[in-house]
Image (cartoon, rainbow, N blue to C red; front, side):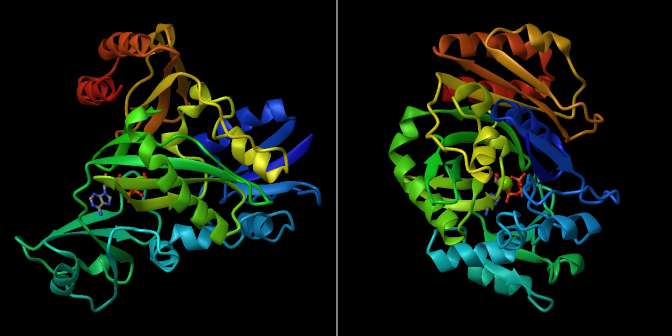
Length: 354
Ligand code: ATP
Ligand code: MG
């Protein structure tokens, strides 16, 4: 079996490992802080399930390997300043932004970007952590610890959030999943629905944007593009050079999942446009105890990551999939009493979207 070393030892690495088996590949996730360095063979492959590459003995070892793909990608995408600059240079629409330098005044940011301005940490933010709103109605200076470490974005009055996951191989062949509709609450993904015929007319626009980005970086693997929709225009919120939470539904709803796709790409196996199976929805399991009765609900596929339970932490997800839509509604009804009460809103949102 050929070995694929994956930087990152969270649930994404574990699900890549699961997807590797039918391809006769062996995925070994690696913790960047692990001091026990593995022996990496010349013919092995190296990729990542995270964009942050802190400088450690492990990341140094991986990045020096000749089969390390996307070497020039991670630093550009992991830092919002470079990511936004890249989007601007490619002419791909993104939320208007400014760099927050040591001396930048909040007045300048409001003058350039409007009444409400969102500070985002340049690096390390996730699940809405690393965000800070400035409101001109309640003037305040840029907080000390955000100076020189953040960008500022205009508040986008979006109608909804859509994401696109695409794959690209070494020859430049690209494949895409259908656009996914996402619900976020307090900056964290709660639920996704795909496919959705009412956004089919935006698919070409989205593919052109992500295709251009992947081509520009000669990217190999799977990349996700989070977008805001304003009428029939998409603007990029952010990119992730890896499998993405909004693509988890593909485990149940596509013939090649978003976890199998990047492994095919890095191993030089054929990429095929993923045939979509029926209707899917995904519910994230956040900050709650495990409930084994989830496993009884028809049309559901449950992933529990085995992590320590903490408030606001992603601990698992449920994919709901069926050729018909009605059984998805039945599954939502069956799940409702098995999830915390505050999930009512997310379940209603999924039911409405279907
Ligand atoms: P992730 O967990 O996807 O990595 P994140 O914490 O890195 O998320 P973003 O995706 O940039 O951060 O923002 C999280 C959410 O905050 C978005 O999905 C959106 O709901 C909201 N948001 C982000 N930027 C803006 C903006 N410019 N205007 C309005 N809402 C925004
Ligand atoms: Mg995001």
